Amino acid sequence: EGVGPQEYTLIKMKLLEPYSPKFNTFGKKPIFLVAATLRPETMYGQTNCWVRPDMKYIAFENVSGEILIATERSARNMSYQGFTNVEGEVKVLLEITGQDLLGAALKAPMTRYEIIYALPMLTIKEDKGTGVVTSVPSDAPDDYAALVDLKKKPAFREKYGIKDEMVLPFEPVPIIQVPEFGNLSAVTAYDKLKIQSQNDKDKLLEAKEMVYMKGFYDGVMLVGEFKGKKIQDVKKSIQKMLLTKNEAVVYYE
Ligand code: A2H
Image (cartoon, rainbow, N blue to C red):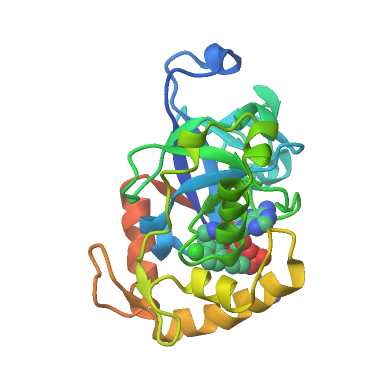
Protein backbone atom coordinates (compact mmCIF):
# COMPACT_ATOMS: atom_id res chain seq x y z
CA GLU A 1 0.00 0.00 0.00
CA GLY A 2 1.15 3.50 -0.85
CA VAL A 3 1.53 6.61 1.25
CA GLY A 4 -1.60 8.41 0.10
CA PRO A 5 -5.17 7.53 0.93
CA GLN A 6 -6.61 4.43 -0.68
CA GLU A 7 -9.65 4.92 -2.87
CA TYR A 8 -12.43 2.38 -2.50
CA THR A 9 -15.70 1.99 -4.33
CA LEU A 10 -18.53 1.52 -1.84
CA ILE A 11 -21.10 -0.79 -3.34
CA LYS A 12 -24.64 -0.18 -2.14
CA MET A 13 -26.37 -3.49 -1.42
CA LYS A 14 -30.05 -2.83 -0.81
CA LEU A 15 -31.75 -4.60 2.05
CA LEU A 16 -34.93 -6.27 0.81
CA GLU A 17 -38.18 -6.52 2.72
CA PRO A 18 -39.48 -8.02 4.89
CA TYR A 19 -36.93 -6.46 7.25
CA SER A 20 -35.92 -7.93 10.55
CA PRO A 21 -37.93 -6.10 13.29
CA LYS A 22 -34.72 -4.26 14.25
CA PHE A 23 -35.04 -2.19 11.09
CA ASN A 24 -38.70 -1.26 11.54
CA THR A 25 -37.81 2.13 13.03
CA PHE A 26 -36.62 3.39 9.63
CA GLY A 27 -40.05 3.46 8.06
CA LYS A 28 -39.88 3.71 4.28
CA LYS A 29 -36.26 4.85 4.08
CA PRO A 30 -34.13 2.55 1.93
CA ILE A 31 -31.45 0.63 3.84
CA PHE A 32 -28.09 -0.37 2.33
CA LEU A 33 -25.17 -2.48 3.46
CA VAL A 34 -22.14 -0.73 1.96
CA ALA A 35 -19.18 -2.86 0.90
CA ALA A 36 -15.72 -1.41 0.15
CA THR A 37 -14.06 -2.85 -2.93
CA LEU A 38 -10.92 -2.20 -4.97
CA ARG A 39 -12.40 -4.11 -7.91
CA PRO A 40 -15.60 -2.43 -9.17
CA GLU A 41 -15.20 -4.25 -12.50
CA THR A 42 -15.88 -7.56 -10.76
CA MET A 43 -19.36 -6.64 -9.51
CA TYR A 44 -20.89 -8.72 -12.33
CA GLY A 45 -19.72 -11.76 -10.37
CA GLN A 46 -21.19 -11.05 -6.91
CA THR A 47 -22.73 -14.13 -5.29
CA ASN A 48 -23.25 -12.92 -1.71
CA CYS A 49 -22.20 -10.36 0.87
CA TRP A 50 -19.88 -11.00 3.84
CA VAL A 51 -20.21 -9.72 7.40
CA ARG A 52 -18.36 -10.85 10.51
CA PRO A 53 -20.80 -12.28 13.06
CA ASP A 54 -18.99 -10.95 16.15
CA MET A 55 -18.28 -7.49 14.79
CA LYS A 56 -20.27 -4.35 15.60
CA TYR A 57 -21.96 -2.33 12.88
CA ILE A 58 -24.08 0.78 13.01
CA ALA A 59 -26.87 2.29 10.95
CA PHE A 60 -26.74 6.00 10.11
CA GLU A 61 -28.42 8.31 7.64
CA ASN A 62 -26.68 9.93 4.68
CA VAL A 63 -27.43 13.31 3.08
CA SER A 64 -29.95 11.70 0.73
CA GLY A 65 -32.04 10.21 3.54
CA GLU A 66 -30.78 6.68 2.95
CA ILE A 67 -29.81 4.41 5.84
CA LEU A 68 -26.29 2.98 5.55
CA ILE A 69 -24.87 0.05 7.52
CA ALA A 70 -21.13 -0.11 8.16
CA THR A 71 -18.65 -0.06 11.04
CA GLU A 72 -18.72 3.06 13.20
CA ARG A 73 -15.06 3.69 12.35
CA SER A 74 -15.83 3.87 8.63
CA ALA A 75 -18.99 5.93 9.23
CA ARG A 76 -16.81 8.52 11.02
CA ASN A 77 -14.50 8.62 8.01
CA MET A 78 -17.51 9.02 5.73
CA SER A 79 -18.76 11.94 7.81
CA TYR A 80 -15.60 13.83 6.80
CA GLN A 81 -16.22 13.00 3.15
CA GLY A 82 -19.62 14.64 2.71
CA PHE A 83 -21.73 11.58 3.47
CA THR A 84 -23.57 13.13 6.43
CA ASN A 85 -25.38 16.42 6.99
CA VAL A 86 -22.90 17.71 9.54
CA GLU A 87 -19.20 17.25 8.83
CA GLY A 88 -17.54 14.95 11.34
CA GLU A 89 -20.84 13.97 12.91
CA VAL A 90 -22.48 10.56 12.76
CA LYS A 91 -25.80 10.06 14.46
CA VAL A 92 -25.90 6.39 15.40
CA LEU A 93 -29.46 5.23 14.72
CA LEU A 94 -28.92 1.57 15.55
CA GLU A 95 -26.14 -0.66 16.85
CA ILE A 96 -26.10 -4.22 15.61
CA THR A 97 -23.74 -7.16 15.24
CA GLY A 98 -22.88 -9.06 12.10
CA GLN A 99 -24.92 -11.90 13.56
CA ASP A 100 -28.03 -9.70 13.28
CA LEU A 101 -27.35 -9.22 9.56
CA LEU A 102 -26.75 -12.86 8.66
CA GLY A 103 -29.24 -14.23 6.17
CA ALA A 104 -30.46 -10.77 5.14
CA ALA A 105 -31.67 -10.68 1.53
CA LEU A 106 -30.00 -8.04 -0.64
CA LYS A 107 -30.20 -6.57 -4.11
CA ALA A 108 -26.72 -5.79 -5.44
CA PRO A 109 -25.80 -3.99 -8.67
CA MET A 110 -24.75 -5.83 -11.86
CA THR A 111 -24.88 -9.38 -10.60
CA ARG A 112 -26.99 -11.97 -12.42
CA TYR A 113 -28.37 -13.21 -9.10
CA GLU A 114 -31.62 -11.37 -8.41
CA ILE A 115 -31.26 -11.77 -4.63
CA ILE A 116 -28.08 -12.45 -2.68
CA TYR A 117 -27.60 -13.04 1.05
CA ALA A 118 -25.44 -11.75 3.88
CA LEU A 119 -23.22 -14.64 5.02
CA PRO A 120 -20.48 -15.06 7.64
CA MET A 121 -16.79 -14.47 6.89
CA LEU A 122 -14.59 -14.81 9.97
CA THR A 123 -11.48 -13.10 8.63
CA ILE A 124 -12.97 -9.64 8.03
CA LYS A 125 -10.76 -6.93 9.53
CA GLU A 126 -12.26 -4.23 11.75
CA ASP A 127 -9.82 -1.55 10.67
CA LYS A 128 -10.31 -1.73 6.93
CA GLY A 129 -13.14 -0.52 4.73
CA THR A 130 -16.68 -0.76 6.08
CA GLY A 131 -16.49 -4.25 7.59
CA VAL A 132 -18.94 -5.33 4.90
CA VAL A 133 -17.33 -7.14 1.97
CA THR A 134 -18.94 -8.04 -1.30
CA SER A 135 -18.16 -11.55 -2.46
CA VAL A 136 -16.81 -12.35 -5.92
CA PRO A 137 -15.62 -15.95 -5.64
CA SER A 138 -14.58 -16.12 -9.32
CA ASP A 139 -11.82 -13.58 -8.79
CA ALA A 140 -11.14 -13.22 -5.06
CA PRO A 141 -9.49 -16.25 -3.37
CA ASP A 142 -10.70 -15.14 0.09
CA ASP A 143 -14.28 -15.06 -1.16
CA TYR A 144 -14.03 -18.44 -2.88
CA ALA A 145 -12.48 -20.05 0.21
CA ALA A 146 -15.20 -18.68 2.50
CA LEU A 147 -17.95 -19.77 0.12
CA VAL A 148 -16.54 -23.29 -0.16
CA ASP A 149 -16.33 -23.47 3.65
CA LEU A 150 -20.06 -22.76 3.86
CA LYS A 151 -20.94 -25.07 0.98
CA LYS A 152 -19.09 -28.11 2.23
CA LYS A 153 -19.81 -27.76 5.95
CA PRO A 154 -23.51 -28.02 6.85
CA ALA A 155 -22.56 -27.61 10.53
CA PHE A 156 -20.95 -24.25 9.75
CA ARG A 157 -24.15 -23.08 8.02
CA GLU A 158 -26.24 -24.35 10.90
CA LYS A 159 -24.11 -22.63 13.52
CA TYR A 160 -24.95 -19.27 11.95
CA GLY A 161 -28.54 -20.05 10.99
CA ILE A 162 -27.76 -19.95 7.27
CA LYS A 163 -30.29 -21.81 5.13
CA ASP A 164 -29.10 -24.08 2.32
CA GLU A 165 -30.85 -21.96 -0.30
CA MET A 166 -28.76 -18.92 0.70
CA VAL A 167 -25.55 -20.74 -0.25
CA LEU A 168 -25.96 -23.85 -2.40
CA PRO A 169 -27.44 -22.25 -5.57
CA PHE A 170 -24.63 -19.68 -5.79
CA GLU A 171 -21.66 -20.57 -8.00
CA PRO A 172 -18.69 -18.47 -9.11
CA VAL A 173 -19.54 -16.68 -12.37
CA PRO A 174 -16.94 -16.45 -15.17
CA ILE A 175 -16.52 -12.70 -15.68
CA ILE A 176 -12.82 -12.16 -16.46
CA GLN A 177 -10.43 -14.21 -18.60
CA VAL A 178 -6.85 -14.25 -17.32
CA PRO A 179 -4.08 -15.93 -19.32
CA GLU A 180 -2.87 -19.11 -17.54
CA PHE A 181 -5.70 -18.88 -15.00
CA GLY A 182 -8.75 -19.27 -17.20
CA ASN A 183 -12.10 -17.65 -16.47
CA LEU A 184 -12.28 -18.42 -12.74
CA SER A 185 -8.86 -17.21 -11.54
CA ALA A 186 -9.59 -17.53 -7.84
CA VAL A 187 -10.80 -21.11 -8.25
CA THR A 188 -7.69 -22.01 -10.27
CA ALA A 189 -5.37 -20.56 -7.63
CA TYR A 190 -7.33 -22.19 -4.78
CA ASP A 191 -7.07 -25.61 -6.43
CA LYS A 192 -3.43 -25.19 -7.46
CA LEU A 193 -2.35 -24.28 -3.92
CA LYS A 194 -4.69 -26.85 -2.32
CA ILE A 195 -6.21 -24.27 -0.01
CA GLN A 196 -8.24 -25.88 2.78
CA SER A 197 -10.27 -23.05 4.28
CA GLN A 198 -10.68 -19.30 4.73
CA ASN A 199 -8.17 -19.52 7.60
CA ASP A 200 -5.37 -20.74 5.29
CA LYS A 201 -3.74 -17.32 5.59
CA ASP A 202 -0.35 -17.83 3.94
CA LYS A 203 -1.69 -19.75 0.97
CA LEU A 204 -4.48 -17.24 0.46
CA LEU A 205 -1.92 -14.46 0.40
CA GLU A 206 0.05 -16.42 -2.17
CA ALA A 207 -3.10 -17.03 -4.21
CA LYS A 208 -3.90 -13.32 -4.22
CA GLU A 209 -0.39 -12.44 -5.35
CA MET A 210 -0.62 -15.06 -8.11
CA VAL A 211 -3.77 -13.67 -9.68
CA TYR A 212 -3.95 -9.94 -9.08
CA MET A 213 -1.18 -8.42 -11.13
CA LYS A 214 -1.91 -10.75 -14.00
CA GLY A 215 -5.61 -10.08 -13.76
CA PHE A 216 -5.13 -6.34 -13.83
CA TYR A 217 -2.65 -6.21 -16.72
CA ASP A 218 -3.82 -9.11 -18.87
CA GLY A 219 -7.38 -9.77 -17.73
CA VAL A 220 -10.17 -9.33 -20.27
CA MET A 221 -13.86 -8.78 -19.48
CA LEU A 222 -16.11 -11.67 -20.53
CA VAL A 223 -19.42 -9.98 -19.69
CA GLY A 224 -21.21 -6.67 -19.56
CA GLU A 225 -20.93 -3.36 -21.36
CA PHE A 226 -17.15 -3.68 -21.79
CA LYS A 227 -16.98 -7.29 -22.89
CA GLY A 228 -13.73 -8.03 -24.77
CA LYS A 229 -11.88 -5.07 -23.23
CA LYS A 230 -8.86 -5.17 -20.91
CA ILE A 231 -9.43 -4.59 -17.19
CA GLN A 232 -6.98 -1.72 -16.91
CA ASP A 233 -8.86 0.13 -19.65
CA VAL A 234 -12.36 -0.33 -18.20
CA LYS A 235 -11.96 -0.29 -14.42
CA LYS A 236 -12.62 3.47 -14.20
CA SER A 237 -15.50 3.38 -16.69
CA ILE A 238 -17.24 0.63 -14.76
CA GLN A 239 -16.77 2.52 -11.51
CA LYS A 240 -18.24 5.60 -13.18
CA MET A 241 -21.24 3.61 -14.40
CA LEU A 242 -21.95 2.48 -10.85
CA LEU A 243 -21.57 6.03 -9.49
CA THR A 244 -23.85 7.51 -12.16
CA LYS A 245 -26.58 5.00 -11.36
CA ASN A 246 -26.20 5.82 -7.65
CA GLU A 247 -25.32 2.17 -7.03
CA ALA A 248 -21.96 3.08 -5.52
CA VAL A 249 -20.03 5.96 -3.95
CA VAL A 250 -16.33 6.74 -3.67
CA TYR A 251 -14.75 6.42 -0.22
CA TYR A 252 -11.19 7.05 0.97
CA GLU A 253 -9.19 5.90 3.95
B1 A2H B 1 -12.06 -6.76 -2.86
P1 A2H B 1 -6.92 -3.80 0.72
CL1 A2H B 1 -12.80 -9.69 -6.95
N1 A2H B 1 -11.49 -7.21 5.75
O1 A2H B 1 -13.38 -6.66 -3.51
C1 A2H B 1 -11.04 -8.07 4.81
N2 A2H B 1 -11.12 -7.83 3.48
C2 A2H B 1 -11.71 -6.70 3.08
C3 A2H B 1 -12.24 -5.75 3.99
C4 A2H B 1 -12.10 -6.07 5.39
N3 A2H B 1 -12.56 -5.22 6.34
N4 A2H B 1 -12.78 -4.73 3.32
C5 A2H B 1 -12.60 -5.01 2.02
N5 A2H B 1 -11.97 -6.20 1.85
C6 A2H B 1 -11.56 -6.88 0.62
C7 A2H B 1 -13.57 -7.67 -4.55
C8 A2H B 1 -12.20 -8.19 -4.78
C9 A2H B 1 -11.32 -7.71 -3.84
C10 A2H B 1 -11.75 -9.04 -5.80
C11 A2H B 1 -10.42 -9.38 -5.83
C12 A2H B 1 -9.55 -8.89 -4.85
C13 A2H B 1 -10.00 -8.05 -3.83
C14 A2H B 1 -14.54 -8.70 -4.09
N6 A2H B 1 -14.32 -9.17 -2.78
O2 A2H B 1 -9.19 -7.57 -2.85
O3 A2H B 1 -6.21 -4.36 1.89
C15 A2H B 1 -12.30 -6.40 -0.59
O4 A2H B 1 -12.27 -7.41 -1.58
C16 A2H B 1 -7.83 -7.92 -2.85
C17 A2H B 1 -7.11 -7.44 -1.63
O5 A2H B 1 -7.42 -2.41 0.94
C18 A2H B 1 -11.45 -5.27 -1.16
O6 A2H B 1 -11.52 -5.45 -2.60
O7 A2H B 1 -6.06 -3.97 -0.49
C19 A2H B 1 -10.08 -5.55 -0.61
O8 A2H B 1 -10.21 -6.58 0.39
C20 A2H B 1 -9.41 -4.34 0.03
O9 A2H B 1 -8.19 -4.75 0.57
